[in-house]
Image 1: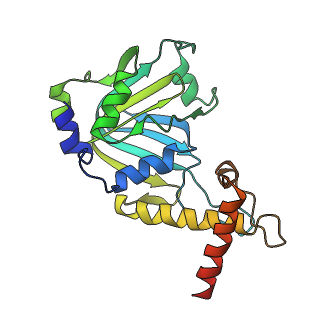
Image 2: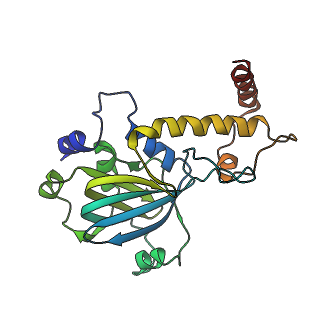
Length: 233
């Protein structure tokens, strides 16, 4: 199973370079929230996330950039819910979550992955699992899938296996190879945000930037120097 995941979903353990999938996983999970899910079985299963570190143009100058994306799985083969020993939600929590009766779940950044090792680590953390659509996780179903995602969000987790995966925004689909650039632009925006904080030129309040604060005053100094270099060019 591990070899299969390495072949299909991500880089091998020997590769150090971060792939677009690695960057996407980090951009979603570092301070992200799992906000919603939807399905049109057997065709589509979709997961939505907020507070992503991906830069999209603001709708107006007095608003921060939007940060919501959806991961849409086409022709899902298996959707499995994971639970930890301290699971305390109701039996109907998944429907309640879909119907906006539960607050978003904070993602565990250590356990959010499209990669082989990451998905196996996520499964290993589960005390209980329940396949809510398709086939149970096994070698046969894995061998027929081309895309997968697994993550923990508090006391619940999920594994999705499918034929294909798309990244969707309110403006439409974005390609996986665009993710590194979107992430780089977010960090540049973050630097600009903190570079003018507390001044007359401060930017529109952004909760994601406020969560991802510079660690020290030294970092603030580095941000200022970097902005000066960029302005000089």
